Length: 98
Image (cartoon, rainbow, N blue to C red; front, top):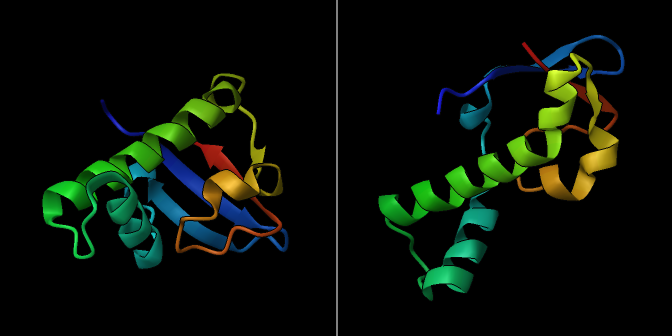
């Protein structure tokens, strides 16, 4: 799958993140929590880390792909729980596919 580029913009117009969806930083706590849950492993290897982050990116894509098709920005507050594992503050921001 070729990942789409996204732009996350704060309410004041400042760009928070611009780049591929699959390069959004993920909180380390989330990766460890999912590693415990899925693999019973406290220190996830690169394979586990990759699986966990890719699954998160795919979940985000599945939830937001309709916005991409309609060429509109998504209000990040509407997807707060889905986006909470990301290490980017998306409060009061919009996410737009390019």
